[in-house]
Length: 157
Image (cartoon, rainbow, N blue to C red; front, side, top):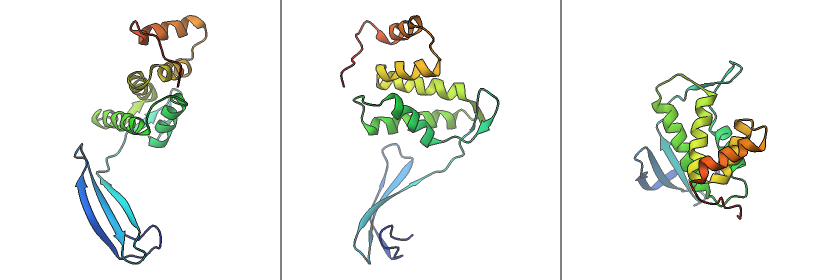
């Protein structure tokens, strides 16, 4: 491994820890040449299933696309980036444990909706309105009632 700062290849491992979930190893490293420190992660690389879109085309799963969708729905909402990362990990775990080589985009969308419903109800409504292609106020009202559980939705960030 080379230092990301100076490209030198003499690197020391200062600390090694297993993640809380037990699925990754975190290593703190130091470059002997420039003395800068950085962190690396080691994870098991499993093959994610292909996503079959509504039009029948197949595409590789993209964590970046998933994260971007979540971040768009959560824009200007009081949700920590760490919570988004946990949601992405949760969705990925469900995709991996499905045991399928291909999954419908509808399945992925439902997983996203479940995570957004848990994270932030306003973001859930935002995502649902696009994902389910709401065409009138009644559909918004139904979605609001579904997540409301007798509570008011907070719109202040």
